[in-house]
Image (cartoon, rainbow, N blue to C red; front, side):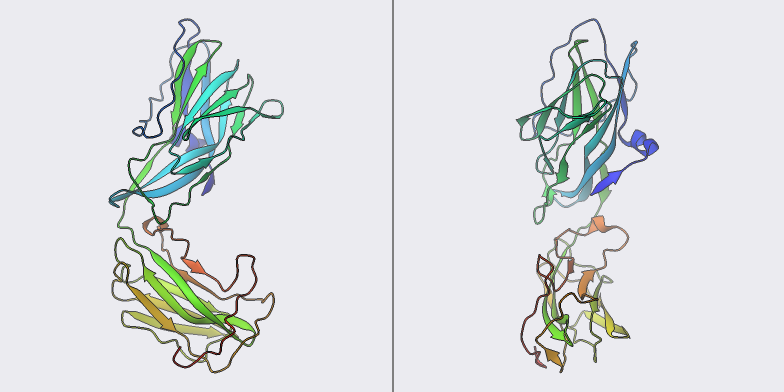
Amino acid sequence: MFYSLSRRTALKAVVLAVGYATSTPQPSVSPTPANASPTPTPSATPSPTSAQLAAEATEFVEQTFFLADWSAGQTYRFPRVLTLVDVPSDVEILINWDPRLFLVSENVQALTDQFIEIVAERLDSGVLRLIVPAGATNVFLDASPVSLYPSENVDTPVATSIKMFDGAAGAEVELLALAIDEFPTSPWGVELSAQWTTVKGLMIPQSIQILSVGPNPVPAGVTIQALCASALDRAPTVPDGITVSVESAGNRSLVQLTVTAPLMATDSRSVLFERDDATTVPVVNPAVVSRVSVDVGEDPRMIRQTGKLSIFPLTDSGIPVSTFKELSATA
């Protein structure tokens, strides 16, 4: 996910002012191993000095995952934009992150009086070394969260941290460690799939399959909605443990399926749609496209992001899919 924070929020979450000395030289920064323990957030109290170097992550990407035993969830961050203040000379920045969580490119830019490409060297799978020129006010990084499913329970995750070495002043300082959010959870997941058919040129579900992928049961009360581009003439057939309601308006129907008994991991249920007027010729570029989706509720972090929480009768290129089969009463 991509976020742009207000200055107040960014300061609360990740800002650390960093002072650097101009006298006693310090050794160069050693990169943190990718399998190191999470870096604690350093003190926000700057060192007393005549010059202050400040930074904040004003834009970042997030990765939400679960601990190895599924006992809790965490959200880690990686900066997309670093805003710098008072950079009187070239500085070296080392960014350490968990490569299992984020994909980070070596294509890095800085803003001085213009946008420029800067030196970016990958020292390890989770360590990037940057040389930021004097006068830079922003550093722009290209990063995205890794698609974790089905292995989104991560053992010993490593928090993103950033260190800086000011060569001119001979000073090594830790700049910031991005905030970590942790939350209790009992994660569960669903993979939806469907067979589609065509009624009056519009694709609608012929059947919907609901697969529980665990590790916890799909809780009672979870709802799955199916928008049918062509109005149904009867309610679909549902198995035990699922109830159905149908609302029709004009030439479309909204079907709501409600789980009434917990659906255990690896269990599946099928919902059947019966039509007598199925055809085989889908309309190109229909005004309404059918879809089936799980209602993720107020806190989607509790649900595993399976990539199959919503499905449509379209190919990857957006072309309508057709089964080219008659719909039988016992399908």
